[in-house]
Length: 506
Image (cartoon, rainbow, N blue to C red; front, side, top):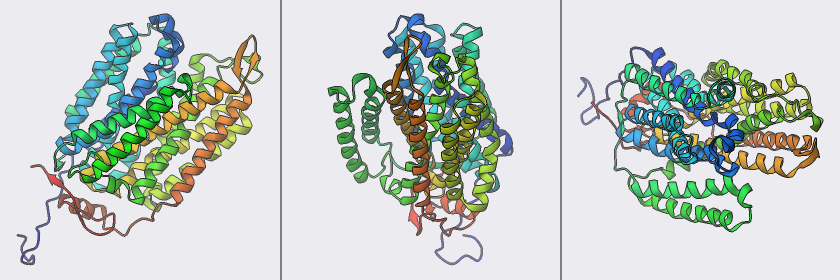
């Protein structure tokens, strides 16, 4: 017992060890996040050519994107929970290994089935981002946490923005398999860097892994996301689409009832139902929706032929380069977001981000006629996305115990992915149905794109409204004291002491 302590008092746990190279740790984890996010958009410029390259139908080729969404949505919260229980660095390395395996499969084959399997493995690696955020919370000194987590969260947008032009350049000048060899090599480099610079987190969550909860979550997500992503092709009122939606809802209800009864749930629904967590996840879904509309609409709009009256007839490379300034703005603005959060709180930061995205779509609505105006509007939306993505994990971390950081941030990342899935379905539906004949082909009208901007801007405004409903910053001790409380297995951020199952491994 500490000298002078009251009899029977619980001794204060020792300070968590801090890495001797915090800058290297942040740089390595952020690089891992960029590489993983880049995989999500890597094949988008290739999709129109997949049928002739593999003999697959266009619908089957679309699975190269859909499957990464499904596996990413499933594996992100699951591997976040596994990392909390068995070691975040260990699970991070496994995720990167899966990414390398998926890249190699895609690099060595032109069979559509093998390509889909490889893309499924690449999508599973999306869990790297919440795992990296959790490691940063455990290992970095408090003064560095906000800025580092902001950068890590922004890598989802940075990688997606950079992936399109890079993939387009590779496809135009090299064999298309080259981009998968490059992605595999980047994955191997990530593994080496993690082994060299990232320590294993000492924090663990007690309990047994929730197998039934994991299966229930997987089935519910697969049913719901399949219905959303394939509804346009199958028909929104078709038996398959409606059946999957109904199945997803029913499974979700049974899964929720089971999770509330089990001792060590896959997702702690009681914590997730707190207003601070629930509203943050809803905002994440809406911001994910608004962000993805920017990428989808920009890349397609500038490639529309001039015969449409509004299209610019740009190449795939040019369309990808239109998003590059937005990616660079994300890199520049993540530390700005952290400073705003440190001074005014992440709630203010997220509100500012949502408002900025809405302004960006207003710009896009009125100025989508010249290339520089399109790039300017897209960059404003990307800037708002960077600030928003940087603030979301800060809101999550202050509302959950440290032992649940991986799972909680995994769920938040999942909500962004779900938002992107809904956005993809909405954009596809609008552009496929609001059309006219131009130059001997059917093309979306300008009003179709303007409608997309209105919908996405509306999603950003809804995110702003949800953010304003978030509880104010709780009265809590300093970050250092909070880390000590977490080490003792006590949570104070939600108001009142709640015993958690967090332990520190020697």
